[in-house]
Image (cartoon, rainbow, N blue to C red):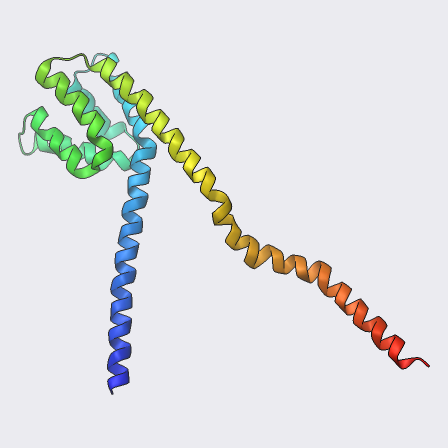
Length: 185
């Protein structure tokens, strides 16, 4: 009975830990998607503002046209303005709540433009350059991790196959020749 309870407790604890690990991996993957698509969002925002839209209109348009991982954060801003009747500057907090740190540059540029009248396009162009460099660094890090990730399939799949194809026939022929040499007078 005690062993059964210990097994149930261990299974329950393992389940909780697995659920937590899955949740953390999903959050990390989502954050990676946000960081990877951030330069595209900034460039799209630049295009929309240069096309003549106000920053508020551009954010509303981004809610429908931005990459998939950014649609929910921009829709939260759009909904905060339309449904909760918040001012545009106050609704930007929803972008930070939904997207987190990757949205900090966009929020800062939009807030500085709204509050202090700073030109938006130069700030967004600087942000675009920074985010593209950041994305390039992220891809370089992933490229450096690739050999480590590929070592597992190499060791477990390729090396045993190599042994079966090259070493096993050599050992088999050596054993056959020893057997034949030992039996002959």
